[in-house]
Image 1 (cartoon, one colour):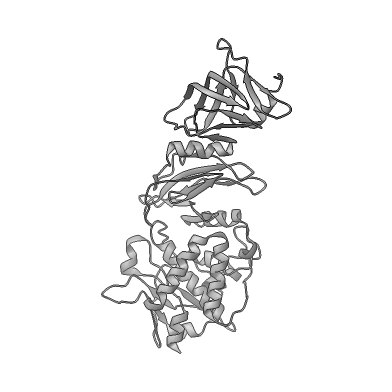
Image 2: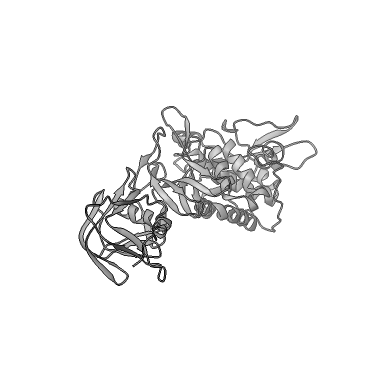
Length: 430
């Protein structure tokens, strides 16, 4: 019976902040109140403390029933995975390890560890530690020591929640999170076990984790950075994260391990990362249609991380897709239906000037036209110049460069709405 329980269970309370993990360990708690069943502290707080804070009004327990702990636990992982697949995978791995790392002991009483933080129970309620967790060592080969009698007093719902508590606190207590108490882990666990997470929006989930000072999360399966703790002052700072009035993502900070795809261009950094060192790819700025219009460095004033930017040439091509620009130069310039296309040409510096190439527009060939592409400090397209007139053929919608005159002032495009600006230049015809 006990062996079967161990194979299913997954309970562990994570380390105390940073270097205290080895010596101090940590533990999860249950609460017993008169005339009420014994309950995991996190789920008790869901009902009596957390339910009306951070906009989650009337947060209620998800009581979806399963016959086994394994089924209930994986149901909770599935809820996490919808918004945060990397975290769900992390906890799944720890769940598998748990089967070899846990010991269940009857007739024991675990001394409480002072990492619980603020607790506001009703009168005559008693707290009892049910799990002790720390790194395996010569003192004990087990990561988790569990009070079997207390464990058996819990329902399947509470047992599964205890597993989520142990894994979330294991994550939150160690660097780079380094939370000193289990309060944020208990709130996160309450959220995972609530009805509200089932239909929660990405924006509300990310904002909630940022308010809890959780360092990492996901956006569309890519790792993002939400918060960082200054190790010298223990002050928390938040990375850029913004949604517009329609709940569309406006800006977010990607970690260096993110891989972003826009049209046919994939962008990624070449830096390696570890669990304890934060590396930021940069802040991505989105338009309402979900295209990344800019990728820039994290603003000054946020300590505790390192920059890991992507290749500049790749970045220019990546951002060009959002501006309806396709840069690959082979000596031919084609403009059709408002799309400016250059192919197989490397961008090595800016401003970029393309001279003495053969530019083909439709069936016309124009030689010795000078095209200039100017970039700003963030390597964003600032404007495009050409010498001559741009005329759109009404029958084909092709834009044609004609009447080239090197003595005239170049026309200028902002690059922000290039398609609309080109199509607007239809005052002349062939």
